[in-house]
Image 1 (cartoon, rainbow, N blue to C red):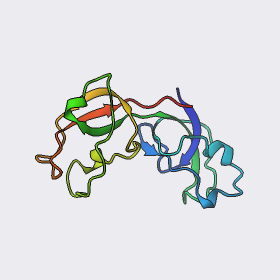
Image 2: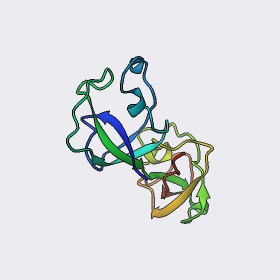
Image 3: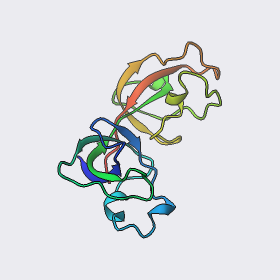
Image 4: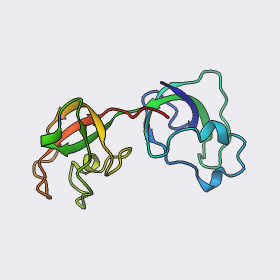
Length: 150
């Protein structure tokens, strides 16, 4: 289900994905707070449409202002333990990884997913991008289904 919100004009393009970080200290006193701060903090979203005939509004956070867009929760790609990687099942992230240069790091610590939270696997993508896990984990790349909006 899509939701209307305001985001920076540079992000206001269909298909753009972002993780909503919540309120900034610069948001205090803004007249558009209700329209901007209406998403779930820490969740990944995808812009599904840009509202036509809407004006660019001034914003203390976004230097080029904000625009009205439609967004919906987006799936998150992540590495999980291979033995729990089945479409329709639930899995958790394996835990933090200090190897930030690893090609799989973005999937071991994906933006928009938290450790110690179970997510439903929508799809098994396959082998992770790394050749060898420095933590000796047996991992599979999956796509977590987007959580339901509150």
